[in-house]
Length: 330
Image (cartoon, helix red, strand yellow):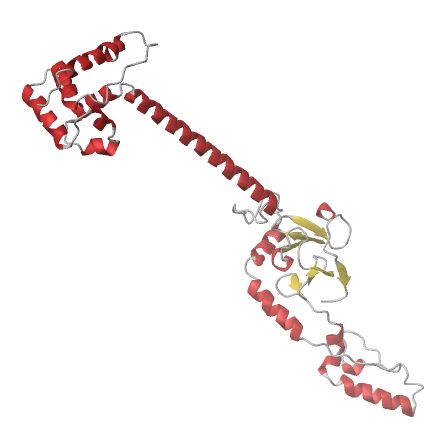
């Protein structure tokens, strides 16, 4: 089997100085390494005798080492982890050989494993701190988001929902978007006719017929005045000159809030007064033609419960205003 006659004495010396030190105190961690010139067959024979293996088993393992050209201890030290896995030996035989080469191998592997774990934990913590710092810097540069991602309810607490008129207006707000567009087009398409009168034009009285028109200058009529009165009478033949039509004010249809331009709206209060004001709420630029509610002489933004006095008798929410002004008619 290629035994070395002096190899057994070398291994005994190793056991006496190295492996036998395991039974000594734990403070003594020094050991004498096996010489590189020692044959692997000698080491394997000694391990087999200690483990009480049969001669056939020992011979079979020695043949395996020689087939892989592992004749000396120096050859075993050159093997890497992947090379050890490729050798056709039992796992127990491999571990015993490797432990004989380096008794501190298991301790080193345990320490390396702990060191890797500690390093991974440290890198993970460092990466988390770095990401946290980057997010903080990004937030400081860009600022807070304008729109919150959370769902904002349609009605919040504090809205005057107990008032019957407010409830009616709220219901109308949800269904009058199309009607508002049609009404705004109808208002823009309507044109008023202008009629001029002279000093001697007849004075009209509301809710009377044309036959009851009295001429204020009938006693002192002249040729020039008669011509002017005849022209005015011809103009009164038009339907737009009807006294009833002239004095009859326009009334609201549908909602009491109607847009008149891109930035202004007209609002009719409960007492019939008509005001013109800004179309958008100064708080969040909410369209008051849709979200506005009229309670008395106050216009309320039902989305955020902001109140604006139209007649100036009370203060608006947080001192903000929609610049209301009273108009004569709609």
